[in-house]
Length: 230
Image (cartoon, rainbow, N blue to C red):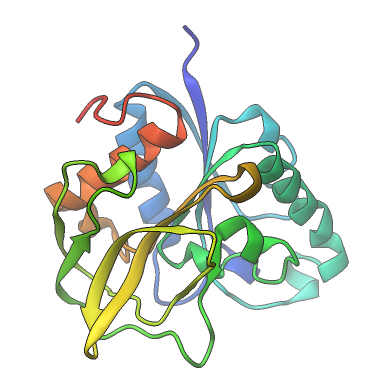
């Protein structure tokens, strides 16, 4: 059987920021998946990064909201073919994992909110300082998290994200007196998308429970048994 192909996108230019080492995280993700018999390509977010997206079994988006600089990486018009490629891929059931601040990648696309199944609401969403974090698994909602109860990891806790009503929340965290969605699945209208807010830096994957959650997400997206290789 041919290896399943995974594309890991690392943010640059319009899709990078000074707070995340997108390249280091992308290569750590690639290393983990290569060890689990995936054929992994790591690629920066250039305007043509999605040109062959339909040849991949899974796309991991690991970027951010950077700067719009037409002289550096193209105009909004230059980027529309990329956004159209992602739209078509998602609508055809292509598997997408939106990793950490990847929720803010492609926010210039008119389709990104519908693809992700939620958003970071600028001026409202925030995170407390990095800390030892306790994420709670909501029981009985999805095969990805079946049997899991909690994720313990030194990481950021995104607070007041806005999941769409059609998304299924798998994991949340407690902050400011209430629970906040941290991981969700978007299967609306045939989508096959997971958003996972954890993963600020490479070291978060040193947490056994965080790594297990990531592998479960990937397995489900690749239509493998959820516990394969764990």
